[in-house]
Image: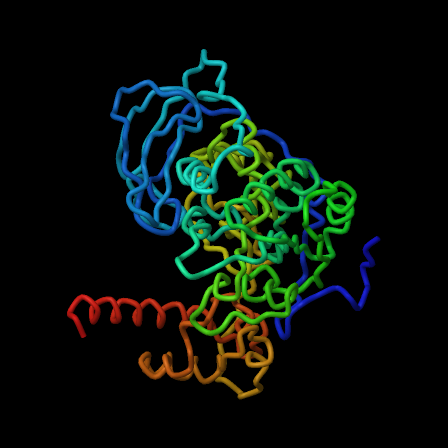
Length: 451
């Protein structure tokens, strides 16, 4: 049905081909992790304003109950991962390295941990606005790692329309296989979530794009497509960063998202396949986002696994469940090796945006000396959005951040392709992140000052 070497496998121009290293977990079925005594739920585990607590210390709560409401339109609700008691609302360590206000829940050891108000929803008789409201109140964010509030992405601005809904199942980051396993094990939830999302958006057709290194998942989904559901399974070339929205729409629809624009500007909405499956579960069981699939992998963990983890579970417990770290582990990444962030402690919680945790040993920690740029232009050839990383890198080193705007630095996705191919080992993407942060701060100040 699908050919691994077919020239028709779709892709985008440029990009890089790192090893995928998915063999560690691609055949590991999703395994539910044991419950722990304490859960730490940060109020900031999505893009936008932090959630606002609606519970108080000492209050007894039930699994799936709302414990924090959105702090604004670009925000997300938060629900209890377990039945228990709120024992504190205080700053705790966060995967970003910051201290973040969090709701601390002590699990009730005698509870059966039944879902709060479990029931199916008659979604077919609901209006699109009602469906969207349910998703907003379910605390949905992009589960691919970006953690952008889902209801914001699905709220179509006046004058815009959606022709196509795209399920992003590329999972192009090396090592990660959580989306792969969701496609294999939860196809019914994916198709239900697709139906509901298409109704909200008014989309005429859906596409599910997945890299060809997930051949078994592609074949299974293709064989199970409901006859009345207009969705097409699209095999993609295995290439990084195939999972970026701009790359996915270019590969599948041959449409380019203009500079400074979003998929909606070409009449498309893109959602991660795990998010879509979770939407299916919301309307089938009334289950908000209280748990997620996490790939725990890498040479530095003894038993790599794909785990179903309640939000707020400590990383240290996840490590114990996987047999512990090897003695020579040197780095822990939240996310994949291309765009993930390194963490310095295991005393941090799994959040809604944690798609995977990768453990590296000294062998993978290549300490390379940085050399001057030799103008080889490999970074230019690799950049998927046609920027000039070598010139932007020179401006960043000279602290000429304003001049980087003329080179469209804000279009940089920070995918790391330029750093990956640089023979001089120049940390290009890190300098671009700093430059963009400084420029955003400057633009915010100017806006506040009315300039």
